[in-house]
Amino acid sequence: MSDATAFMFLALCRPSTVGAILPSSRRLAETMAQAAAGAQELIELGAGTGAITAALHRHHPDVPLQAVELEPRLAQQLRKRFPTVQVHAAAADQVLADAAGVADATVLVSSLPFRSLPPKLRRRSSVAIERFLTERPGRRLLQYSYLPRAPFELVHPDRLRWRRLAAVWENVPPAWVWELGAVAP
Image (cartoon, rainbow, N blue to C red; front, side):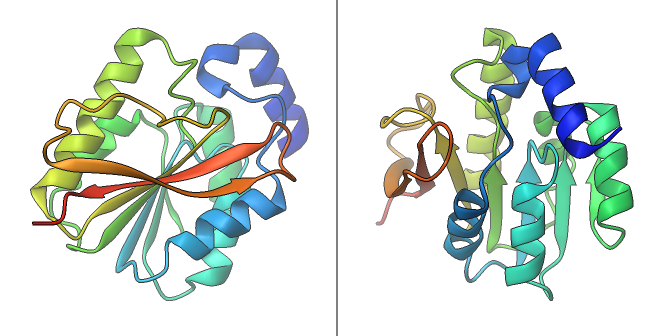
């Protein structure tokens, strides 16, 4: 099954966990990859068909990259397409709980569809991301959303802040790229 066919099948069968009608555009993938500049390690959450994975791999060839994809079929396709990338067929919160030893300047690059995820999964994922980021102040999250507002509400707004980086009008639908990082002292 091709990447596009697998994506469409999952988008129709599980729209709440896919959250999109098409894979990320090349322009969105490039914007996300460029925003990850300075990362010592990269962890991509919700890698899907690998549109952003490819851009991350191209822009940061010497940076260790892990891809996290909940859907086993898509994870298997990612393993075949990117043999040098460590791919996890698991939930984001599980992988982040096991990633305590990664570099201080680790960047999470997320395509998780927070606005459409089931509430329990959305909460588990966002809490795990906040916990991961607050463990080390050099860590940050890059996340896109299809609405011009922060992708999810923060549990620790005193410790972390959202910052809107870009709007990508060439994506279908248009996407806003956000960064979540530690509040400056």
